[in-house]
Length: 172
Image 1 (tube, rainbow, N blue to C red):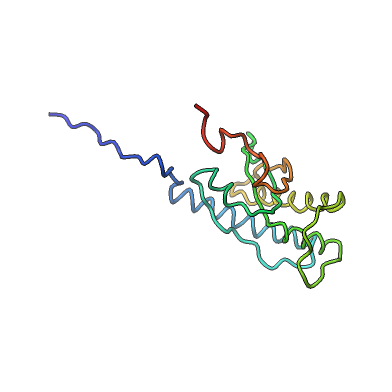
Image 2: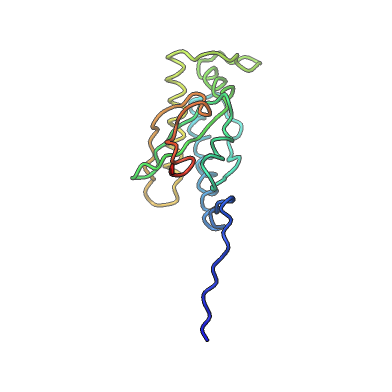
């Protein structure tokens, strides 16, 4: 009598996460990128207190999109030689405070919510370009990973950043 191999039960309502080893490697890479980003931003800003990874969730892209702050600015980054899309998001008040710091107009209160000027937009692009650079430099290999700032997205929750099949699977 032969025994058939066991088939593991799958719960399709809860997608798989990364393995523990892969999740630790990803967390380590992102933590190193945050340390480098702090150093990169230190040259542009008066002071940067702390930058850290809030959460790593590798299950479903739509969960990540729902967790984005609104309003926010996001760096849409193409990672690696194949240009894997990734996004790093920051709440709008923080980015506006950084821009005000770069301009020397930072006061005691958070900057008021308003449309950014073309000059401020270029400063936001400079700040978020440093995010892509830090991700590439933090790659744990001898040669840095190719990471390019594809675009700056204002209010990423309300924007079509990724194609629907990336977020919600292939349409039937």
